Image (tube, rainbow, N blue to C red; front, side, top):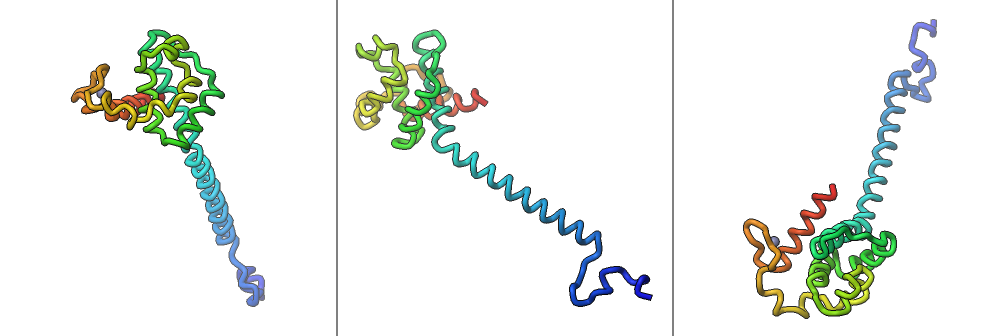
Length: 170
Ligand SMILES: [Zn+2]
């Protein structure tokens, strides 16, 4: 009369499970695998945020500031300039690179103006634009600041502009 019992109970040594429980187990295993996949993807995205995504942000920022100076669109040499900015992000961090971009584009000395302030020249001369080198220009509020309330110094202003640039790019 064994056919009256559920199949699973006929083999006590194996503790077999009813079909519905097995399906539930399969579903849980699939969900676990799926969660592992989404976590892997998230890890990849987070890894990209330093420094490749920062470099993209900074190139957008550079192009916006460049356009503000020259009144025409900046045409990037995308791959080369991203690579250059990535190297600087690794060395200096994104906020410092943004601050140096700001100072670079505000510089009116001959070679930069003659070359129209390209990213390549910025990358090549980045050490000239460290904050500790320009203390005298750091004390005053930035001339081009139209923020309300006004930024207290150049660094605050640059951070706000970078943040706005990120938001505009979204
Ligand atoms: Zn400002």
